[in-house]
Amino acid sequence: MAVIRGEPVEVWLRDGRPARFVWRGRMHTVMFVLERPPAPPAEIATPSRATQAESIDHKIGGLECWLVEATPERTVPPTTYELCYDLTSDRWSLSLG
Image (tube, rainbow, N blue to C red; front, side, top):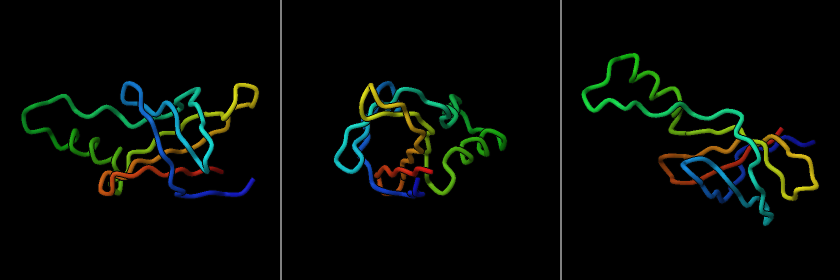
């Protein structure tokens, strides 16, 4: 399988998580979220240095990335994809392999 990095993709969220995406004109359904960014801190006051570091860690380079298993059809075994949301450009991208 070829390595694919940063291809544009359209993503639909459900409860703040990727649920479906269209890649190369084909709809994929997310079956499992394998890894996700940590939840943002719930503190209203000024966060501690540790909390600030955690917040930065899951948004490295302005990206929020999810590792998911998805399939275009129920009869096709799921494949692992990395979906990344670029906070600065408001765009999603996909990596595979």
